[in-house]
Amino acid sequence: MAVRPVTEEEFAAVVKINTDAEAYLNSQATLTVGDLRELRRLAGYFKVACVDRAVAGFLIAVRSGTSHADPNYRWFSARYPEFLYIDRIVVDAGFRGRKLGSALYTDLFSVARVSGAPFVTCEIDFDPPNHASSAFHAGFGFTEVGRHAVDGGKKTVSLQVAPV
Image (tube, rainbow, N blue to C red; front, side, top):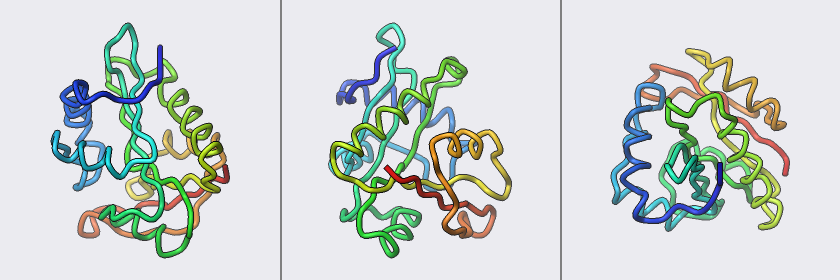
């Protein structure tokens, strides 16, 4: 397994992995190749995890101070002057259980440390709950700093921060 920066040639694979996981993501989760180009422009981190040269997962994180329109990103922007916000992490279903998420998070925290970001931020589904995600994030030092409703009140997310 390797974690490395995404290439534009891999955008189609990233879109497919994201599309396959949309049932588990929020309503802003749909991605196109054009969206990926814009996210890459904003991203402080956009890497893929590859297994045998196949894109098996990806993580996109956006640094504070950008024009990112995500409501969770804006929530953190109103409260924290500097951070690296995890916009999304998705691992292809066929590659789950291989610690790709952990590898991506470990690499992300290393990049955050080098770049001087004092915090990594994210949201976790609270209602309905995602217990596996909560436990995973707790292992990386994330704690809840707020909650808010998303998707027209259909679910509530826990807004989380981890010190770098």
